[in-house]
Structure formats: structure tokens, C-alpha cells
Image 1: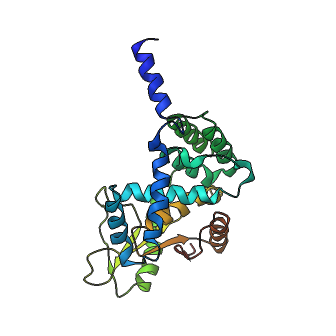
Image 2 (image 1 turned 90 degrees about the vertical axis):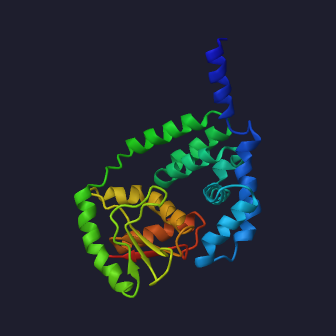
Image 3 (image 1 turned 120 degrees about the vertical axis):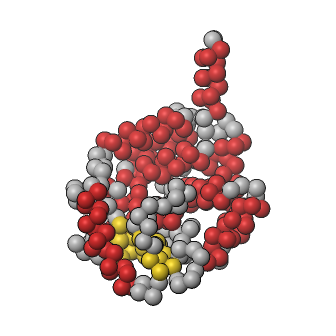
Length: 263
């Protein structure tokens, strides 16, 4: 075997689930850290997460990823199709690929999870397969003009709700800040405490259903940073679909707000 082939082979093996203690570290980290974060709410949540992360010698984003991955894996524990699979021993990046896939094609994601556990996927191969599946689902990009019109419609409604709050008027944000559509904070506060994101908008109505899980996962991620997160949907049926998706995946209905602001 040539040196280049041997190096490639070793790289592939390192990416296979279960071959490294590092792969399982995220699960152990999340299980140990989660009790220390229980009960933290609102303004204490971010400070508490940073303190716990520092105690474990990791950065806050690493801890967030571990916690989110564990929550997703636990949501799959009741799936008979996945009985006996050691998903907690796979790399956290692999779990993130499965979670994204699960958001728009549950059946394909579960099949991929079985292949991952069996060692049929490297992390890179799994990511490539998920991207191909996403492209096949034809999630058409959001037109800037559509998003702009939607923000012009939604913005005044939210501003009335938070009339006593400061509104973030910046059109651009530093790369380390997550992308949201609107942010608010109490007068004089140092941090933005309320974030709102708009589901879509899409030209093709079918994409609201296909991409719904992606948006729910995004809202959950933002709830680790902001005290209150609002997912804005254009119709009551999408709010009901969101709540159904959350119940099916073991997520409490109070994890974030869902507001209906019709076109």
C-alpha cells in the first residue's frame, strides 16, 4: 500500500463510528453537564452554560452541540427500527447530519442511522449523502425580494408587541452572532434577549412542510442564546404542524414561541 493510500485509509478509519474515544466523548459530556444546567432560565442560561462548559474544559459551542446531539438521539430511542444501535458512540458531527436529514425525510434518516451504526458511513460520506438528499428534495432558495417583503410585514407587528423594548436596527451582524430576522432587548440592557425568525418564506408552499423540522431545530438552537425565541409562521396549520413535530420528537411546546402572522 502506498504512503498516500495508507494515510487516506487511516483518515477514513478515524472517521468511522466507535473507533475513537473522542467519538463518544460528546455523549458523556452532555450526560454529565445536563443536570448542572437544569433549572437555568432566561438571563442565567447563557452565563450558566459558559460556566459549566469552562468546568469541563470545553468551549460553550462544543457543549451546545453535545447537548443538542444527545437530545436528538434520545428522541430516537423509541424507534423500533433503531433498537440496539450505539448512536452515542458515533461522532457528534455524524449525529448532526442525521438530525438535519431527519428534519425533512424521517425514513431516509433512520436508514442512514442504521448504516452509520454499522460502520457503512464515514462522517464525510454521511454528510455527502445528506446533502444529496437535500438537493433531491429541491429546497428552493428564498428570494431576497420575498424575504424583504415578509420582513416589512412582520416587523411592525413585532415592534408593537415589544413597544417598550430597544429594536436592533443593524442590517448586518458579526460572524459570531447567529442570523435572525429581528432582535429586541429591554432599555439599557447589554444583551439582546429576544430573537424572531421567519419560517421561509417560500414560493413553493410544499417547502414549508419539507423544511419545517430544520426551522424548529434552528429555533431550539437559538433558545440556548436568547431568553425568548419566536418562530413566525404564516398560517395556523403550520403552527399545528410545528407542535405535532415537536411532540413527536419529545420537545416541549414551551421550548420557544410560535406566532401566526398571516400574509
